[in-house]
Image (tube, rainbow, N blue to C red; front, side):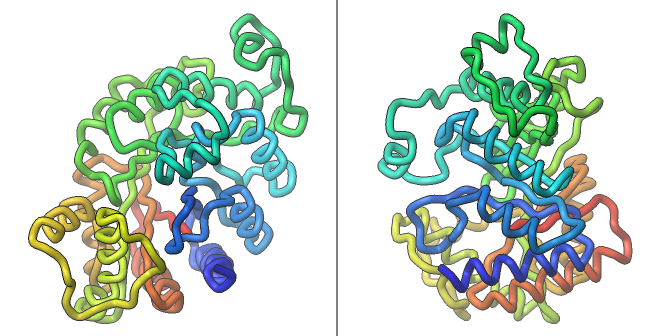
Length: 330
């Protein structure tokens, strides 16, 4: 894990130097494949090792955390690193039910109404924390001094129309998890735009803004990129089989059943795999087809150097014609 964290720091520096707009860290627990369980600590480390890059969560799985604790952690980050911190919020546990139960240490409401209410509370904590009837009911009169006035940008993450509707109703930007759950992307974006309310008390933007995820593996040749991408495919299949473990080396031929190949191909359909030019063209078509404002990229490689090369090659190619923006995720 120490090696993975060191590689994450190198990737943050690379993203900062290469011109990516932002770097986000997910929240995952009880897995040997990922070292992103203490999301706020990873954000602090990345922010300390970069100078320009926006750093945030993709995302904090809100049912695992008390909103007050999230507000205090991200308020602290904002005070330390200024206007470079993003707070993406998700409703999934980011782990299995047993681990979620240990994290939460008690019952938590996973429903959409509770999720929206907790986001409203977070928005209040990051604002001026003026007491009114609704805020007193939500906060029970408790304030978070370190978060007050930081106005940390909030994003709603989602893979379905439910999260998109919440983002729209709250007037917040929406980040679609299309890199592994692409099945409702069109409907989710349509729902978000239809429901968008710039007059909501929580609104932070005046018009809809959509970020969507895509997988990435870029190499000098398509053959090498496809070979390296088998690490990503193996991880995906292992999760579905319930046999999680460390990232596996790439293979020349995947060992999977026909239904697993079909499932992985469908779920990972938004994957830019190939030469820099091929990957850039794929992403531009992807963005234009769905009306996406920003693309956020994720990519796994058994050798961290290959992941770093992939992001570097993509940045160099994208700089030739950079619309929309691309963002890296660690």
